[in-house]
Length: 114
Image (cartoon, rainbow, N blue to C red):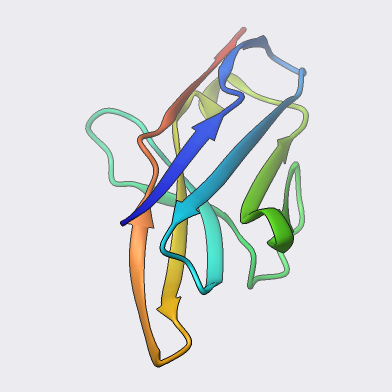
């Protein structure tokens, strides 16, 4: 079994910064892709940042492969960034098989006040 656990969410004023962290544990041989998504009530979950994409802007994703961790540095936050943020990982469980499995964290709430 594989678990992803996020941390670092909270309440911040507009213009502020937050750093989200996510750690993966369990039966992991390699994590091919990690990313961050967010979702607000009534809307679809949307991609915020991916470790395989060269994304620029207010948000920066980084990984520590040795620790199976991914981070999301969020700067210049806006009220519209308010959402539940989810960590995502594509996990290869064994060197014997290239198959990967998708896992999600439980989410962490980010609230940006105006």
